[in-house]
Image (cartoon, one colour):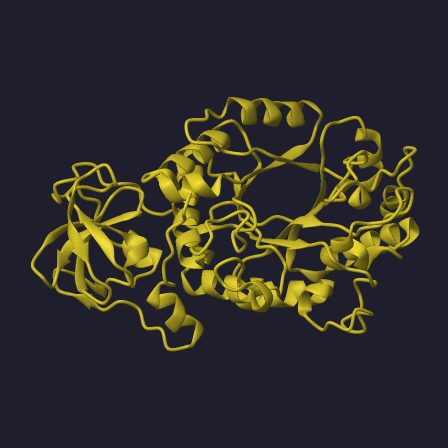
Length: 429
């Protein structure tokens, strides 16, 4: 289907230029303006009739919100009163959540929603885990000192949390804590009017089933995971805010991790409709107030071909920070001013040893040996543990050993063809 194209929210652009100022608090409401042409509706959802289109730049005074914070109620400078999707207003989620919850008609709700819970889960000490397909390599994981597993559950509209609950119960039965990573389908996010509230409710159910941590989405800065032409850290922060409140309402001890962006500098080559460089994206998340709605900053690192202690000297001649372990740690930590710890929901080194020639898109790792993979993983875990910045590190991956195609996941696996695990042995020392 043709995907709707939209401009970046004005407040994000201004924030990235360093000139953002919060919406002015005015008597009787919050002053803002419309950042992109948007429907004014008779209720908080696309199922309600449109009252007309508000044009870009139209002043709008907000006086209420729905319980999810996805829709805002107020009056436009034209005199029209109704509901508008909050992502089309020049306000951050924090401002929206400061408004009173109202009914569809705009009246104050009899039972206002619970206030936003701000990071009640203790940060805890460093822990290590691995992304797994199953538990056939549990002995190797114990050898490596892993106490967490990661499993991914794809959400589709209408799903129940039953499959996630089974995965959680299985992990606990094996004595592991579990991170459940939950992405969804970009076309549903774009086309289903109340998608964010449905998605947040699903995550609440996953938390209630006992998830020790939930990663909200996956790599939202690229168009294979987010609608083309609509990549926007402000929109993602709206999702994160709704998800955070839903999760904490059901299980305050579930660790909420923001969906890790893809580590990339490809925006110049492919355009911002398809990808945002991850440093620009996390800066936009920080400007949108994302720190308020997570316990940990999700981060991926998967393109290293030098020891993680090195801060320069990558043989590809590309100085972009994603080449370096410390480049990733420093960039994400500094983007949020150290307000939240980092959670590597994916960290791995690619080696084709035992498989053959890597696909062209991964040829940069052709000369990485299994011995180097083991040594570098061991060093990365040691650096993360001692940094004081990293809460959780999930190795990508443990046992995807049989998958070596256009996406050579088996090359990242620490259990190698034949069943050995040099990385596990290195981590055990």
